[in-house]
Image (cartoon, rainbow, N blue to C red; front, side, top):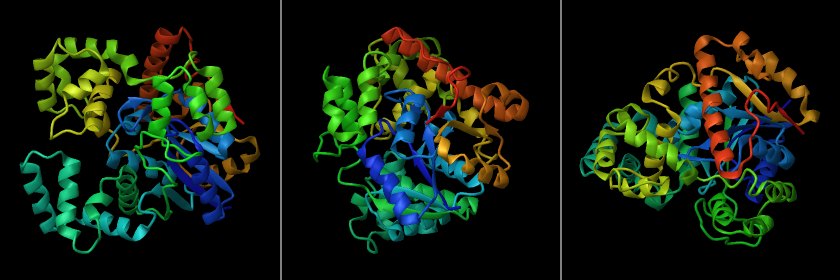
Length: 413
């Protein structure tokens, strides 16, 4: 049995993701596709446009056989942590042969060369990095400049290469595989047609997730606009759910954010990614900012990317602290595999997983307290708690009460 793993967000699911799955099957000859997917909050530091169960249904319709949830503690973390946790989850299943990801590069050679430098951190590279950081650059920008100084004469257009989020994630996946000593084989495909953050639909049938979210956010006919770029099932689901439980956006969490910033001003640095400099800026800006978007813009400096700021804000909203993450970095990150959904024809896959993994498999939430260690249960309860915040925001905005993690049940397709 051949099994391929994909790390995804599907925010929202679109035709590019169909291409990713089709290429995964073609290139690996796999029998099953296992998807590790972010839940209700994603790595760019925002809520997903639609809840995790709807996105699971879209993924299963698109060809996934099994969808597992990446715990929120990792799905909203830095690219390095996101990649480590996701790769660790797939690796600990013990039966995934290949992990395949899309990049703008579409070639493992350069990605592996960069991953080796970042894992080994040669002295010259570290000196370049420290010099760049001393100028006030953000860490991603400083790291990119240091890599360019160190390897730029060996790799053409390296600075442009390092501006791509998918290339950066690809490097982090390779670093994670190395650090874990994983037997999983990495493969990459060229990102299909459109750029990662392209705001416009550049082709008749493919648009970036960023462009699709903007269509849904900013137009009453947003569902009609996304139809050419998504599967019929996805289009139908958005048509049925639009104005009922979607679109969810970061600004819908503004009241919670403002409450936390006003009442926990002296404790903000406890939250994951909230640097002291950001906390100082919050104190100086209160009460002039209100919405999530306003805060994200107002806190932007040379030293902090928008994504880093968004992550700090979402962690404040969700009550995720730096110490929470530190608890799990020495435990292979994911301490269980929680099933969000599966295709019923893929049931032989479960026998293969159970024969090869030591991870507890969460198929019924009610059983979790009996099969998880206290530490693992705490990680799972963070997902439950933060999902309840998502549900509360959806109810406030749309008047729709989504099922909670105990009553929603596994999506079966």
